[in-house]
Image 1 (cartoon, one colour):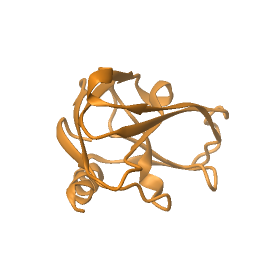
Image 2 (cartoon, one colour):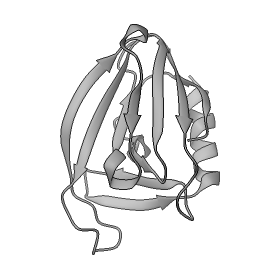
Image 3 (tube, helix red, strand yellow):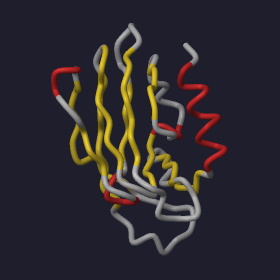
Length: 132
């Protein structure tokens, strides 16, 4: 996701793009509303293309007073950030320089799937995220 201000309406559990990693470190802070962050661990070794088994490590709600959450690159930062409430929430995201040819990966734990996300895909996803 490009750095900047992001508006999160409501999470759609059917959208597999909501489980992601990035090819750089990242930090975000909720500045309005409440956001829920989930972190995941990859259980497989990545040897099977298109396949990734994930296990949820933890989940927590973030309010503006709670400070910044930091994620690592690649498998060190598999996460999902969502708004489970009925009102919009706003967060600020900052990412370090990309350390790979692509922007990150999208995961779908419902079918153990993973695919590479290119920068253009992420820009479209960010534009959709702003829409209510």
